[in-house]
Amino acid sequence: MLTRSGMKAKYERLYANGVMYLAKGERELAVKYFEASVKQLSEYIRGLCDEEQDEMKSWLLEMVAHVRELEKYAKETSAASAVKAGGGESFAFSQSELPDVSFDDVVGLEDVKREIYDKVIYPRTYRELYERFNKKLGGGILLYGPPGNGKTMIAKAVAKETGSTFFPIKFSDLGSKWFGETEGKIKALFDEARAEKSAVIFFDEIDAIASARGDEGTTNRMVAELLAQMDGINRVKGNITIIAATNRIDNLDPAILRPGRFDRRVTVNYPDMNGREAILKVHCRNKP
Image 1 (cartoon, rainbow, N blue to C red):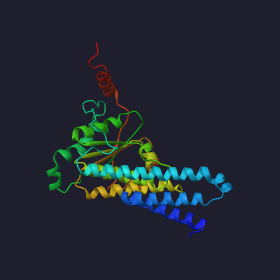
Image 2 (cartoon, one colour):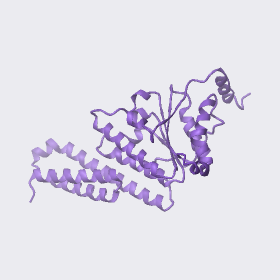
Image 3 (cartoon, one colour):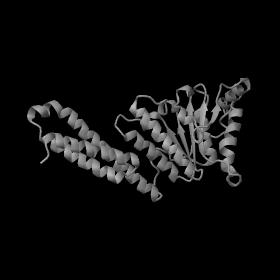
Image 4 (tube, rainbow, N blue to C red):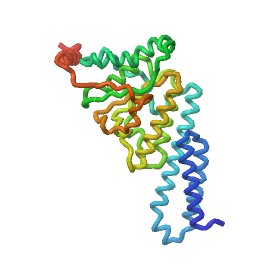
């Protein structure tokens, strides 16, 4: 029979294995390890005396609840992947309908639109021509400039113009206080995007997701997983375009800006007088 320290050590090993398999996307194995860790933790709680149970009860119950939450997440994502494979509903990261924003709605940014057409729209419209000359398809584009200048609208317009499934992602969609859960979400996001015929992933405020790495373990793991997934899309036949927006390009991890990642950058500045006039006309459209 295991001692109390042995039961605790076994629980920690089971839990760590569950997190590892969840991050790898092997959700069925993750569920098994999480179930076993809950059972082991429950046995550990029963082995405590009344006084020790009172001292550790809140922490232990919180850990049981957390493991149950991870177990539920692993089951849901596993079921969602099975549905996706069968042509069912899309996973929670994507929008069910195309954005209702087109490039006709994006005014005052004509130079930016030309760059986007050259880097995103034309390669998809004339795919065979680009492939013939061995030109890169898909990849990452970084929109940077002051806030409120239409970076999100541009990303939505790209999705609509290319007929792509749109994945709008913020830090709150990926961040988690639990070890390994953030990496699992990032992998699940890219797995879903790869399953689409054409996809646009839009990271809003990418500086919150891929800030420069340091001593903070969570940030380091998040950036490492994002880099690994971005490198992985180079093996896909150009069906994923990644667009990110930031007004703090100096805060980004240098590795995220290397070739093959966000090496194509577009500055989105304030519109000039002609651009402001065009914006005003759009907002006055269909008004007396």
